[in-house]
Image (tube, rainbow, N blue to C red; front, side, top):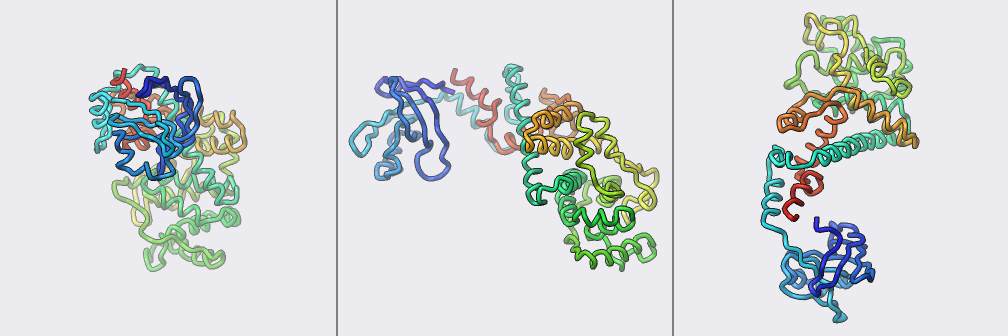
Length: 413
């Protein structure tokens, strides 16, 4: 905020060549810094205090870790500091205007709302656009890293990884964790052995989801069939079901009950699960990607929301909005992770193209941004805004946010 050229207490010109690395543990505030004092380069550590006298108050004068300090930065220069050998440590006094502190406190105080909402109009449009573009990359890289972390747990099996990622995405946030647990409890090799038997595939899924108990639904023949199949397959493959009670139903419409989502996932495994290879093959065309999720339920689930609930006029397919969310939260990260892991920049770039071609998400976060004049015209932008909200606004990382940084910088001039 103050530029790279400063003046020390003796009038010497100090150029910050490299601020070094922020130290979050004991010791000097910045390690391995480089500065130039009147053209001579120095390498060492930098310490920052409110008052210069804090040096003694914090007992740095008796700590050898501070002997290599090359610059002391303070807000109030109430004394000068010397090294043990008697040499004077260069000292820079930086005084922040009162408006800076007012903005900082206003931005970082507790609360859920976007604190800078009323000030964003002051920012040049290019500043807003550049930050959102960076955030979109930051978000998909974070998601891709989760894919790679999971990949290492599956022995670098991309299909098994894809299976888990798709399952988690089918949880649509509320049931993401239990869906991931379910998928990780079922090796694809077992599903491949029974890919020609839809009843057995469903039995494995619902059994592992802890949704089968032969003492329930005595007169439901299909339910009892799944129970018998699961008990046989569980013994054969030594399967252990999830802990009961993990599934969430609060504020969930029947159409989105976990049972139907599980039925869709089971449908995806009929004939063998090979979705990852087809995702990569069709990654240039969003319409073709949508076709990969055109799963259609039949039979028992044609009229069922769950084992307990029947319904009328139930859709046998996922809605287009649901498919869009699957592509945003599962397909794009998979494509980006695969492309970046292979060094295929073109493939990684396709993940961004996929998001840019999809409509923006419609949720409370996106609507709140729209209300303060920051709309999202596609999924790439909505992902950026979601990331900004979760990773910066809610955690009060305003100094790390380019918008917050720019607003505070305006007080310095």
